[in-house]
Image 1 (cartoon, rainbow, N blue to C red):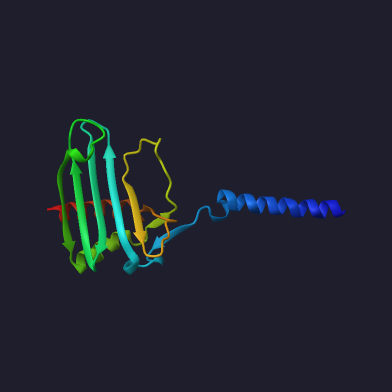
Image 2: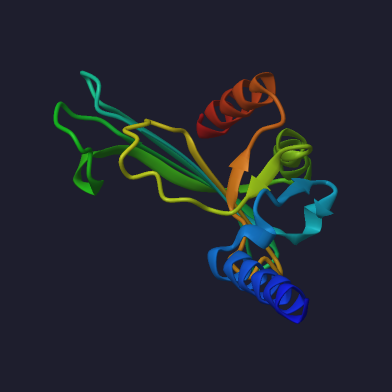
Length: 164
């Protein structure tokens, strides 16, 4: 009997160690914007779309805070080669956002989820790749997903209007 109890304890310890070592204990954890990530804690958001179709397409949007200001950066790359590197930037700029514009930006993120960042190098997916950073994140979560497809499309339209 002693061996069975002892073996069971060892098995439990091995499983616990394996779960910690391989991260199983924290699998599936996500954070939700508005419930776990507060508006005032958001420091940066990246949206990047890049495809190798002909012609290739590249679009990047960045929302961020700096010195108490809300800023928007956009970058478009155009050309007939892939990948479209920085030398193919045809349109870019940074502008300061009003409080109302930042609030509207946040409304698109609200309800979206953030999970642990994963490398997807072999997928060939054009994106968009979405990353959200906030105070006290500690680099654990960044990969963002909109709450709905309609919010994502409204966000893209909003960004296009800010580029004007």
